[in-house]
Image 1 (cartoon, one colour):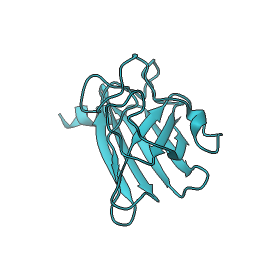
Image 2 (image 1 turned 45 degrees about the vertical axis):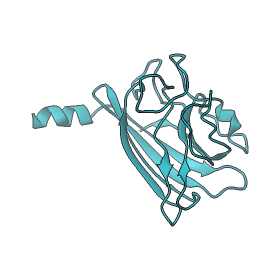
Image 3 (image 1 turned 30 degrees about the horizontal axis):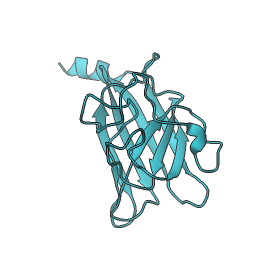
Image 4 (image 1 turned 90 degrees about the horizontal axis):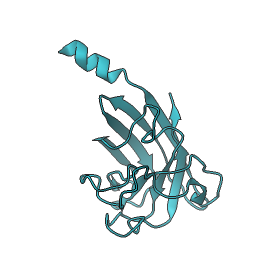
Length: 159
């Protein structure tokens, strides 16, 4: 059983370095590790509003060239689903749990998600954008969850 766990942990990996959009100080990093048919995501982010939740999404384009992060386009949604809570089946592949900032404005997310992959294919996160938003996600407003401005942007690259 131990060998099987080791083999599953050896799947493809990717990472993103989050850089602030203009006028913001949010930075961080995230890793994406394929574990069986799911993806283990670990993110560490700083420069957030203390004590606040911030929406955290994978976006269509791995392009952070726009000063406001809008070049990353909309949420990654290869299956044409409505925006929703990451705990439900009806959601974008890019819908992830919120970042919850502590009193110092730092957040750590450690979660495992389905409907995305690090492997090549339509659900692959590799080459996509990773965005930290200014507001919490309401998980219902279409198509963005009313998540607000983009505080930081990163490109998910293979490791």
